[in-house]
Length: 128
Image 1 (tube, helix red, strand yellow):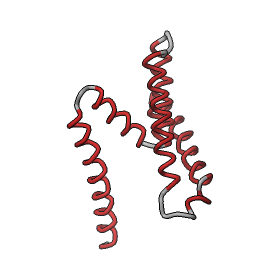
Image 2: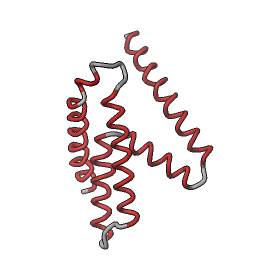
Image 3: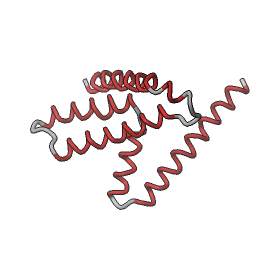
């Protein structure tokens, strides 16, 4: 059942991401700055904060219902919309736990290794 909850939410999030890209396509043509992805990442992080804040401060009385909604909204919708929101949440949780060094390593290694892995994939495919 949990997979179905995530699946449905991810479809909604993915469609919202695509719609956001279409909405900002005209602005994206005016600049080399990836405005659509930037907006998705920032809005997604804000929404993730609101969702997590709601569930940690006001999350319903029945745990099963709360857990299903939390899974649907966070892993499902927000995961389909942008995984940057999960990255932001994990970074903030590390910082809140006092693991500033780990948070910095996580930030830098995710960005640097992610871009490096993408470059490696491009390079390998161009060799084939």
